[in-house]
Image (cartoon, rainbow, N blue to C red; front, side):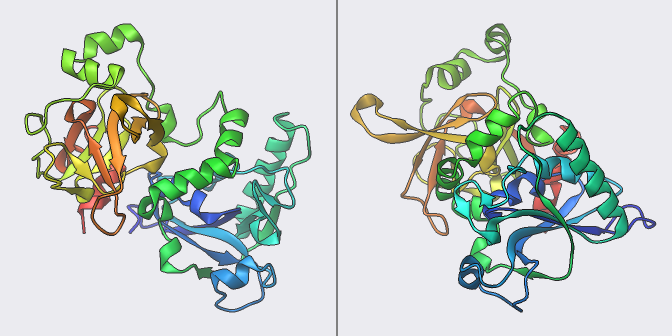
Length: 334
């Protein structure tokens, strides 16, 4: 519920191509309580994914957002929306072509329409694009949630999600167009420190692991057997990486997780060192070596993120607010 009785929760609906990629930027914004992937704008009632993909229903893939206007404004949501899409593309988004992948803003009332039109005008006048901004602003009618396996896909299937986002061209486009600005509220918070600052902040072991791709001893590290509730953040940048909700005992002697807390903050790259072929895991903003990911984990992801404690800082759930991670308190309120 909203903390302000005079401002009840409101809805916002955005289409930006593949809805898998539209969930993460909004889901952990302070003031956003729910993000649902689904279909809107068409004529077919209760459409299936296959029907929408055929391009015959008139629906667009979209995200339906519930938010508290006392904590986050509609204008702020629009600012995040523009950073996810190519607003000059009228034929789809990135590798996904067809009307079902068009970008559009679906306004729920006259005030949202006014704000959206002004935001679009400002974007066009910014000089950021060589072509016209063609994203449509349309009246919202009805939203149909997508099938369960599409919801939070970036959490359920992080490797497939990251592969798709990169392969589609979306990630590279965002980094190029918005390279001097943040893609979300959180990316401004988490920056890599200078070499001098890193050396001063880290212990010798932490430096060896994060900066030189080292590995700490198993069963002799801070968090391998930590059973407290909370989140794990990058020791250098502070960016959120993993949750105790996804931690399990792998028997290896290192902290192990079935998935990231924020897949946007995790980078994966091939690692052929030590005469092995593995997938290295690094933090996006801190560029810290974290560990490796393997495909021998438990359900539902089948993954094991094997992470060095030396790369992490643990924040107990009771300290989340005072440490600046209040948006993650809801993870532990169920």
